[in-house]
Amino acid sequence: MGGANNTKTLLAESLQDLMRTHPLEKISVNDIVEHAGVGRNTFYYHFADKYDLVNWCFQKGIMQFLTENPTLGNWQTIASQLEQYFRENQAFYTNALSYTGQNNLRDYIQEFLCGVLVQRLREAQALQGQQEELTEGELRFAGNFLSGALMGILLPWVQGGMKGHIANCYNCLRCLCSGRMTQIFFSMPIEDDAGHKKGNG
View 1 (tube, one colour):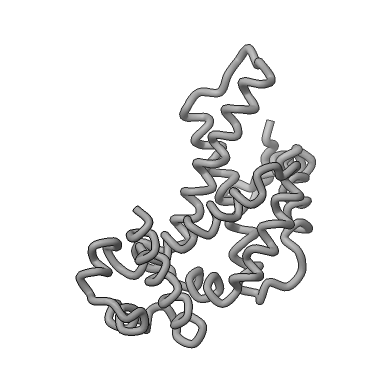
View 2 (cartoon, one colour; view 1 turned 180 degrees about the horizontal axis):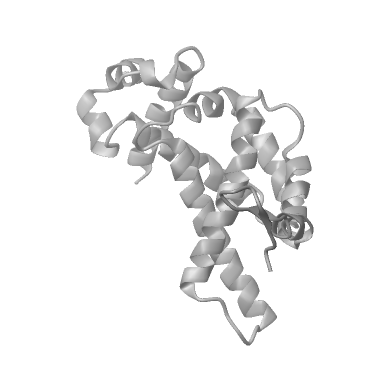
């Protein structure tokens, strides 16, 4: 197991080195293995393609982050710590998140966040002892919605050069989910095809 992980880490470091100077789309598996000093068969023993390796880099990095920060308090603390993690790996994430093709990191991160959020919702629901528990479909909907909202915060921040603070955007998301913004949105009148306004009630 240790040898396999060492090889994966070597390939990950090779890819990350190359991504400091080359767009992800321009980097081939040959480039990665030559830079790492291993053979192609070694690469394909561990990964399906370079995008699989990119996703593994994220998974390894985020798991290490969670291991090193096991007792993070509230979501604002988590946002601040994640901000530091992304800044420390800015070249990698700026490059990787610019790719939108098949098996991209954007989708992978959103699915990861969805799983984490659904699990947290289950735990919170159990602790609160609610009589009317959310169904699995409702939990999944909430997870998809919230993970999509978080990606809507993360992507512009990364693409904008990681300026400002994620926590500031998180405060807006918390305000949205608390109902203050949604009440305004859902109370807005709707216009029909003729331009006549209708109430939402």
